[in-house]
Length: 187
Image 1 (cartoon, rainbow, N blue to C red):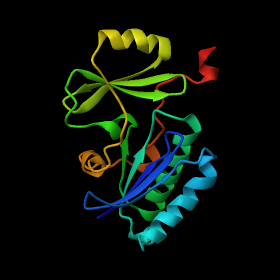
Image 2 (tube, rainbow, N blue to C red; image 1 turned 180 degrees about the vertical axis):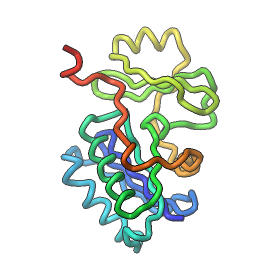
Image 3 (tube, rainbow, N blue to C red; image 1 turned 90 degrees about the vertical axis):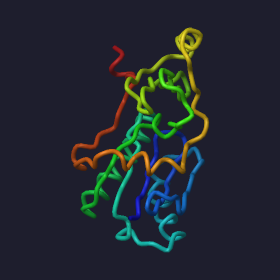
């Protein structure tokens, strides 16, 4: 089974192809440009480097957020379109789930830093059960009272295996996952 991972939640774009849950090839774009102009180009290059066609992909994983409002929407849109047109399963992961590691204790909070604060997820039995967003000053207080694991490196070898434990979703039901309120909602 060839699985395509699409992650556009952050400043970077991460694409990977897994074959039977083993990482075959990956591409990370770190240019701070518009994801919409780079993602398709990167996907075409990834497939070319893997000597594969888009029809060779028979499973999709997409990161639905939290993260960049526009970035997440781009990745989700591409994944939904591919899943629907290729008639292949699609699974979703949150950006915090990218960093899950079996070495992280239960009753710990996973924290993913972004420009103005942190996305926080409470870990229970190697799953994230609660999500919240804290500004940097709020996080400073929160981190003194709780056990925190700061996200630093994506667990690329475990991604597909973890995602395949999840049930596929109807592409029409895949939506971005937002934790932080956007400016319009704050008023």
